[in-house]
Length: 138
Image (cartoon, rainbow, N blue to C red):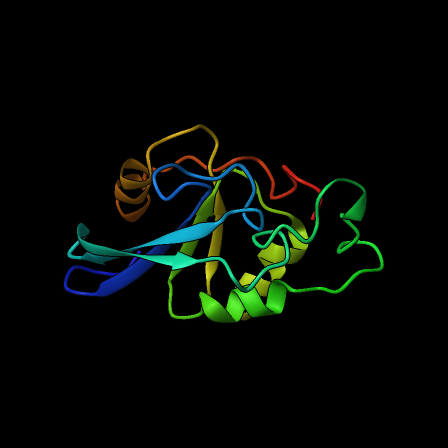
């Protein structure tokens, strides 16, 4: 975690702008929290227009992006590239790899929490991670 005085941006994948999404790529938006001295100082909402999941392109039988379909993880990683970390309830390995390549720390939560509480625990180093990124198939 950054030392006191450092400014961070922590993105939280959300399906409704109020809770943490079960699936990183399927989120409709990201709540980006601005954190300074380990305290939330502001937030912004970024619509997920950079991933096919967020736009409803990959659903059901059309969910081929991990097999032979396009890989839009680089676009979503670039769009969140100014963030220090991204929190979600589920994230596939390809999405995590793209985020890491963009310099963003991917984090899959072990349990459901409010976005604010997850960010507070994350910046204090107390947020529990799930065992693996593969809580979903992408």
